[in-house]
Amino acid sequence: MLRVATTKQIRDLEGEYIASAKASWGQVLMELAGAGAAKVAFSMWLEQPGPVQVVCGSGNNGGDGLVVARFLKLWDVPVEVFLVKKAEGKSEAPSNAMSSPEAKVNYQLAKSLKIPIHVVDKASGIDSAAAVLIIDALFGTGLDRPLEGLYKDVIDSLNQCGRPILSIDIPSGVNSDNGQIMGAAIRAEQTVTFAYLKTGHLCHPGAELNGKIKLIDIGLPALPEHKPNVYLTTAQHVASLLPHRKENSNKGTFGTLITVAGSLGMSGATILSTESSLRVGAGLSILATPKSLITALPAREIIYKPLKETDKQSIHPGAIEELGDELKKASALVLGPGMSTHTQTIQFVQEFVTETLGHLAELPCVIDADALNAISTNTACLTSKRHKFVLTPHPKELSRLMKVSTEEIQADRINMCLKAAKQLGCVVILKGSFSVVGDPDGNLFINPTGNSSMAKAGAGDVLSGIVGGLLSQGLSPMDAAVAGAYIHGRAGELASDELGMSGVLAGDISDYIPDALMSIEEGLGTDLENNLFEEMC
Image (cartoon, rainbow, N blue to C red; front, side):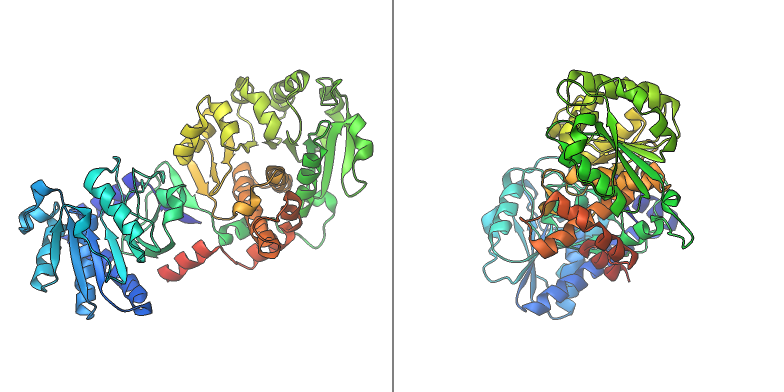
């Protein structure tokens, strides 16, 4: 796993380091950052030599850009700087051109090397027709206001110029905490960032603008433990969590998962979930479902438990008593796939969670799909006691649980996931591109696997089965959720490699779980992970 920083955490770390080291360490950090970015810029330039333009703001990001320009000049790369400032700050005097002491020093150094520096107050002042590469050093991290006027015009113009762009720290205009676009944002071919990934790199829509991310070590110490503790999940970390399969074992060794799910017309969800639990290694998978549905279900590896049903062939509250003996066998539960929101089924879910699971606090349970919708009408059944629950909502389901809009969820996925985990007392997997997994203690993992081929009905049922299967083998709720999300996404990637981005079905994701496990055990990470570790080495 790889630590990811919020804007405040990285600012605090830099500030404390500079204060403790004394003697111009802010200048040293800017030099190291700029030198690292310059190497990346030079490697891009080698692919197509020609003039390079560095487009700077007046802050520290602009200071980094001036360091890049200086190194490129020393390496005989034709380079010029465009300093974007509103008309009232148009003076080229170092005391006025840049806003921080470090940036002012680098302005002077660039001038001393006779690097052309153009102060512009209109987007038309930057003519990129002859450039082969643009360096975006406008804002970097910490932007907290929507861009308009001059800066928005400049960003729009750079995006339209047709030249590759290297962004320094984060594409300018992207919020470095939540990935939101602040009015306008640079679309980069590559982004170079320093010390740690920022949470905004891994949140949409800004995540689509990074291009290839390169991480440069500038000598900062480790981030201290401070909530939230945010991590990027890696193949190596997931491999360390996977259960060891002993030679001397039997099906009981790897746990019994009971999936309570299904209703008329929705049995596909139950099969996807239960079969996925077996593919991830569970020893025994029992599907407890309305009794009239069982005769139509496949006679395969799944064991069926018939349950009392409503007149609409969904689970009846009377099924709680019928589950008594099965629960004694269970290592873990999955509750919800294809269950329906029939009034009596909602009653079953709420009573089952409150009463039955309330007395089985050590029994881990994945709560998914319609069970989440049932609980959203009475979340007290979750919060009355602390449970070993993993909730797997998509944004709309979490919006119902949290009584906020889906837009609010999507605008700040990391904090909303952490808030839900703390408020509900459960581990929460907020599904979507870059799914996030949070726990009540303020720990959060961002999942890098998966792609748009998985945007198909039933994919969430596969995830619930994977997480349930891992729980049944003894993983903690957080570990099962983190590993389950990663395995699920990797299986989807492998399926799309074979079948294409449009042709993947949820059943294909389930089929590729064994291949996903093998690739993880071999340490094969995502392109994002591999590139980051390559740069750090």
